[in-house]
Length: 147
Image (tube, one colour):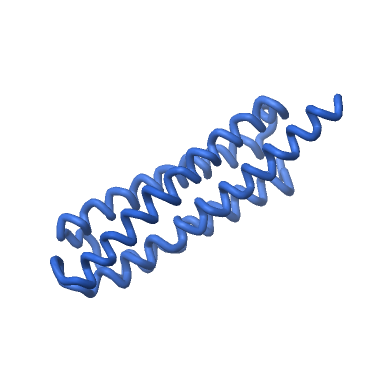
C-alpha cells in the first residue's frame, strides 16, 4: 500500500476515535443531566438551565460528533472492507443500537423541555448504563475481532 494511503488511513482512524470519544461523553453525560433535571419543577430557573444544557449538549456536541463518527467510520469501511467478518456485523448492530439510543435521548430532551417527565428518575439512572455496554461490545469487536 502506498505511504499516502497508509497515512490517510491513520488520520481518518484518529479522527474517528476522537469523534467517538466526544459522542460517548455526551451519551454518558446526558442521562445524568436528565436524572438531576427530574427533581426540578418545570418553569423554574434550574429547570430552564437544565433544558439549555441538555439542548446544547445534544445539538453542539453529541449530534455533530455522531455524524463525524459515521463519516470517518464509513471511510474506514471503504478502506478496509470488513464486510466478510462476523465481528463487523456485531459491531454494526451495536452501533445501530447506539444511534437509536441517541435518538431516544433526543426525544427525552424534547419531552423535558415541554415539561413532561415520561419516566421515573430511576429509569434515567438505569438507561445511563446502556451506552457503556454497547461501547464495550463495539470496542471488543473492533480490537479483538472474536469471530
